[in-house]
Every structure is written in C-alpha cells, then in structure tokens.
Length: 309
Image 1 (cartoon, rainbow, N blue to C red):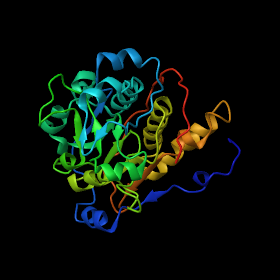
Image 2: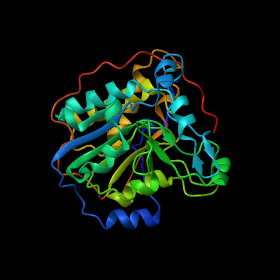
Image 3: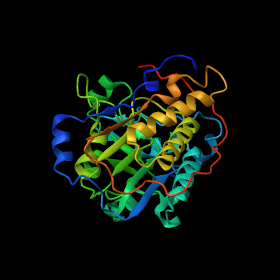
Image 4: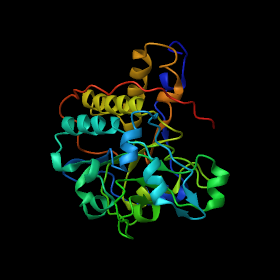
C-alpha cells in the first residue's frame, strides 16, 4: 500500500461545490477578516453508558440507525453514541499551535448546541467540529426517512427545542460565520442527501450558507485516531508553508500518514482518503494559519472496520 502511486501523490484535489453553493461563496469577500484563530467543539458527552462502553467500541464517527420517520430518538441515541476521546487531544493540540484561548476550545460538557448558537462565531477564522456526523450511511434508507443531517453535541438531560444535542443543517444555516475554513472532523459530512443528489450533503452545504469559505469534509466513516493524526499534520503542513492552499496542506498530511505507516493495513486508503477540501479557489486568507509548530501525541490505536460503500 505504501508503494502504490496513489493520485494524492501527484495532485492536491479541491472539490468545487454545487453551482448554487459556488454562487453563495463568490458573493462573499475573498478573505476572512476575523482576528481570532479558532473555536472548536470536540469530545461531547453523551451518556454514562457511552462513557462506559467507549473503551470497548471502535470509535467510528457515523450513526444512522436512530431515526423513526423524520424524528430522532434522542434517548436511544445518547445511550448508543460512543465517546470520541481522540477528538479531545486532536483539538487541544491544534488549539495550542494556533494560540487559541482555552475558553475557545469547547470540550466534553462544554461542547453543547447552546455553546455553538450563543458563540460569536464570526470572530473566528477556523470553526472546528470533531464529533459524530448523523448523515446517510444507507443513502436510500436515509432519504426515505427524510431525516435532517446533524452534528452530535453534548446531549442534555432534558432536551429542549433550543438544545437537544443535535445541531441540524437548518440550524447551521442560520449561524453567522466569517470563517476562512470550517473543519468537519466527522463521518460522512460530504454524503449526498438522496440517491442521485449532488455529493455534498445539506450539512456541509449549510456551512457555506452560514459564511464558510472552505470546508474539510469526509466521504465515509472515519477512524478516531487516524483522523486526529491527519488533521494535526494538515495544520503542521500549513505552518511549514503558509502559502499552501488548504488542499495542498491536506495532501501533505495524507502523504505523511502513508509514509509513516508501519504496515499495509495502516497505509490503507480507508484511513487517510475520506477527507476532501471543498471550496471556491478564489478564497484565500491573508492570515497565516499557524505561527509555531504542533507538538502532540495522538491517543492509543484502535481497530478499524471497513466501510462498505
């Protein structure tokens, strides 16, 4: 696997959004003028059962089986969502490298839907979510349910309309962003809404409407530890060369992951290939993303399932 001439060895790939999303992007200013580096939401708390089972389960960021019609069974979801402890180290390392304030890194019980909705997100150049993405795994089944895609945040003991723990696409579209990029370090955030639809879900598209200029999204279920390693390396690449595009930084992080793999299994594209940059290539920040290198150790290894597409 390490010696295969993968496409990523020759090209840094940027995916253009749909024509309608592209029109939205090009109506924005080319560069973010936000002064704060990053706000991040990671390792949300789901339930006591989830905390207990997290050590026994594979941390795969995609849950699709908790819909009944158009409604989500919040209680069942809370009991079944595994914790993602690797996301804590992931955003802490990136936040430290960017010089983020501790209060801008929302972890555990602080990673709430209320925190997202009340934060002044337009003050940040990077908005970062490292959690489960609730989108289509079985696209046809998901489409029939007419379920709205969402990001899973800390699920409150008493869910309300304001905060039920799920940040849905319609709510994302109402946020006010001024972000040079949004990172969705979660599962299937680029999945299509229905069979034959464009390959960018309502979840990702909503961030463009809210003011994001560039997205990092995923096409299939992702491994917790591998994702942390790739995301951290992406920002390290930008630190080494601030002139890199987002796609070039992601390309370098993928190549580093492949080259550092200790076996063909660890170099398998199921681990490094799900992420892609979606943007209008005219959007480039005037700010260097990093000012000093990332120093981080990722969490322990986890077995990974193959995702059947």
